[in-house]
Amino acid sequence: MDKIVSIQNLTIEFNRNIEVVKNINLDVIKGKTTAIVGESGSGKTLSALSILKLLPNGADIKNGNIFFNNVNLLKLNESEIQKIRGNKISTIFQEPMTSLNPLHTINKQIEEIITTHNVISKNEAKKKTINLLKEVGLDNIASRPKIYPYELSGGQRQRAMIAMSIANNPEVLIADEPTTALDVTIQLQILELLKNIQSRLGMSLVFISHDLSVVKKLSDYIYVMKNGKIVEFGTNDEIFNNPKNEYTKELVSYQSNIKESKNFDSDSILKVEDLDVWYPIKKGLLKRTVDYVKAIKNVSFDLKIGESIGIVGESGSGKTSLILAILNLIESKGKIKINKKDLNQLNKKEMLNLRKEIQIVFQDPFSSLSPRMNIEDIISEGLLIHYPSISKKEKEEKIKNILDKVGLEYKNTIEKYPHEFSGGQRQRIAIARALILEPKILILDEPTSALDVTIQNQIINLLNKLQKELQLSYIFISHDMTVIKAISDRIIVLKDGLIVEENISSNLFNSPKSEYTKKLISSVV
Image (cartoon, rainbow, N blue to C red; front, side):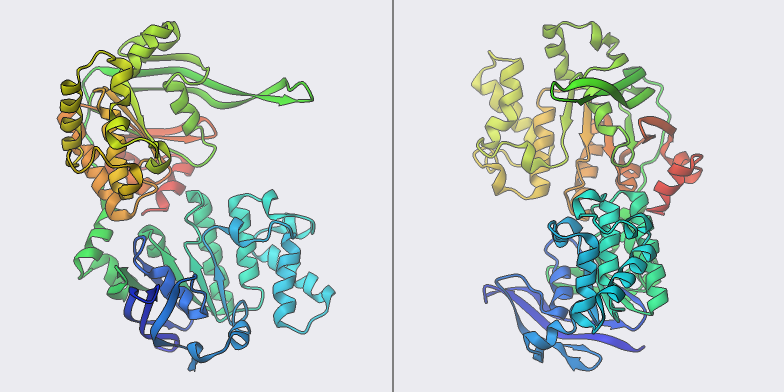
């Protein structure tokens, strides 16, 4: 195998005393895709960025060597390494909005990359820029040279970043989580684009990701990192079909988890009938309503006692509007019944009383838990609203009981504040806060998307355990089909405010009917 990049005995430390990458050896094969996978803090990004000496402040290379075409990059001075950056070795970062200059047009930024490394006229640079934009599927932007980054969608911005990164026909492209912030179908388009460009240029691709479903589609060789060390290396087939390391096995097994589907003959606890949600379009100085956008269109479904329904769809599909309508936080047309009570027929007091029956867990616990309140106050807040006369002893007993159910110790938790906990622990606290009122329905809005894979798995297992113990009904909102299939008995697929498909989980994954559903499933299968 012809190595184009070779990392040898690399150790990176922070503040000259904390080793974050520990004596790793990693090779990038010419013309192939080498993936580095791992969770947050594993050292995968630092390892890759060290190739171009792009480490953040406070991080230093303690020892090791990095060779590119037999040249030791760590021996080069800043002027010499700049001739390689964006030229022989290029990078794509996770969030293009922070990588692109908001004050310059897309065309100008690509032209700058070209002229920095080549002796070329402005007209030739402009022509090459237009050709690059067309190659990455931005034909409409190629003909409009005055487009700024903020005018593009997330997928378009990432395509523009790819155009910049391949402007000088690099030999190596480092892609750091390039699809993480994108919807599933856009992810697939970007991956296909990278494959096509790699084939045309014959370049090597270093792909950094925590998402094994993406890595499986793209990589030839895989390095698995944990706590700054490489714990396993193998081909795509070896890692996914015969992993050796226990950590790798855990990552791979999570990709194939699917909840065993069963038929529910229990009563419906929630019934949604012919639901419509509109948002007004306001224009003019007086902001008069001139039209409406229909976010939810004639949606109907029911939720059984003890059942989990997964609602999946991309940005703009109507997932959030559906949640807000069910929680009676926005106006809607149609019927929403909880325990046979029509929400539209309830007065304010009756609605407040019913809110105990339906609670929500949000996507990011760090932003949904008040930083000014300790955990005891956060969890008991709902109790004091609905049961103002509750005794201190009874309150403490309820908090202790619910913390025990979510796997947290009462004494080591209640006096602390949210910032003192990990992401997984904060989400357990958010679940405890929702369950303290003993609801019958729990709405889970992307509750695992801010968590690493192994922590996601722990939260999913916790939710499944709690559901059995407490006979809870779940509405699980996500764009991630891997998570959806691990918790849902039944799945509803939303697109543009419409239900395009509904089925029990196993049937939907094995025999999807809608073309849109097939695209979503192809992202994880």
